[in-house]
Image 1 (cartoon, rainbow, N blue to C red):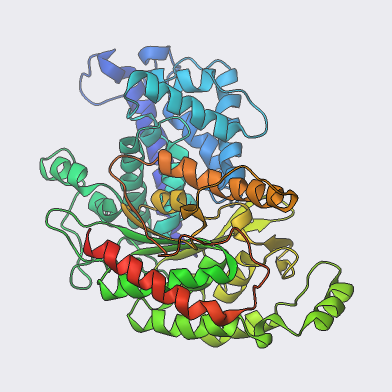
Image 2: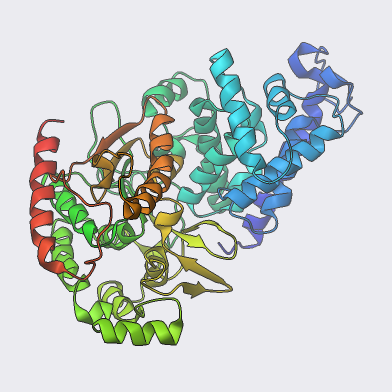
Length: 521
């Protein structure tokens, strides 16, 4: 986001004000000194801190700011590893005062590759052992998180939850960071301070009574924009207005999560038809692989006609125009590229006919899709930029389609790193998730009996394990609907990726099965 001089001044004030306030508060922390008159930077406190020095809260905020200053997306694995390393580098210097919970997590974490994952694991183990880990430590350091993603509330929410989770496992701590980060985002951009702006991204049953009960003075009535929705501090090119129906006492943040699976993605179209008929409309869409194609269409137009248009498009996906010529043509393309049977020109043309030059940040419904970065060997989430390029990268099946170059990186199919990204939707603030998948997760796995089954079963384990782990780790208040395909014979793989004869029957079965499921919810 481009900031003007006034916004830049507010951003600097968010950091400097927090540091100055911290240094003023150090002498009086937990009643260690009686406040007489105006507070002064006397030092002391619980850690014998020198006058004018700040506490561990600002030290850890500086660690986050050092990483975000390089332009990093703080929700990515690389950035979180860098933040965790900064935390541990500071902790190794023997700071005089560290919060009890943060100290226990940092002392159990070993530096090196994958440090963020180990730190989160330590935080989770501490939470399991104590049953509580919602201290204010992650909140006190969170201002740089908001400044790193100004004007993009979805990115702010994801980063706030990810950075909080490094040391504080309890989702209440993450919610507090989300509320404060979005309030900072709004304040820096507009000069208004309203902590309620983040309510649609947290558990309102928990937070509204606290705010209404006078626990926070930094609130105003939310600013209405359209019937039943609240603008959540969105920038001029990224409106994240809630379009889902409200329930009494609670407004769920509904997310559609669409997974990968080649031509079997037609099942998701039937699910979308049933969801539209039931009046279920997303506030957020997250897609991987072929699910990025379906998801992008819904994010562009969540109306009822979209699923029907997708059904027609899926018939075209199996055509020769999209996947090139026959066997001879495939062999020629393989000889020319040495890496793929088909070019992606046909698919690009099909996507461009649907989306044109649309940018992700301009979509009516917030949308993200994932691809695998070859150079960085990790997941990359597309949150802005040309929609067609991002979707093409997310569904670039290795060997079938060529890697997609964007900038200096090459990307391949998102299913390699995140086949059904439920966790991402929750990180972005979803409270009710509808999982649209191709049907493989409905099929129980058995030990392979034939040589060709070894690779298929192994790959399916690699695809499913992250989904299974994320489902098991979801907070209790998150509602997840894994929609049915209506087909208990979905293959683990198919070589007939251009055969569109099964598309319409798959769509019809998934539509009927999902409609039946939704009628019983």
